[in-house]
Length: 213
Image 1 (tube, one colour):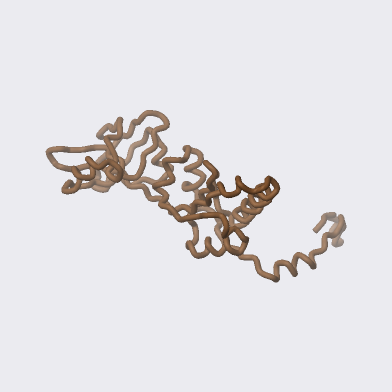
Image 2 (cartoon, helix red, strand yellow):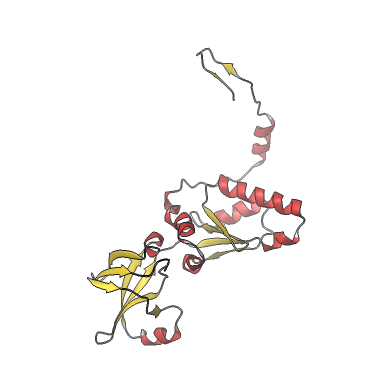
């Protein structure tokens, strides 16, 4: 086992490393987001290299991080994170609106996202939502619920991960595939159904059990 105690650089961000690795052999260490937040773990690279990772607490591995550089062999071990893309909704425009509009829009946005069972994280006046359906479906939800005036874009998950805490990353990426995802787009029939909905008081259907519906 090879002990890894620090990150040497990043193959995606550091110009010097980009140049140095241009002709090098790259041995990928493929991780999911939960593994990237573990400062201590043991993993195997694509070529079978056994690594014991022991980093300082709160250090988060990012896509492209270089963990090992073997000069004689001209081989580098580089992290590859498997992350979904993320829809980023910019809420800064709401800060220019009257308080009642800000509250109403924020509540309605939260309700619409929750109705889709989409996991979301709010940070720095933005909402991050990991993609679990096609982007055109997410576009449709935004338009149907009247949020097209809020700027939003689809961004690589690797660009969002460094902004998140461990808990936020686990919420956004870790369990996204386990979510019972569906897309519900409101239709005129929804209003008709709501108009004919009757709320009954406590009663029984002859089974001795009192309830409401």
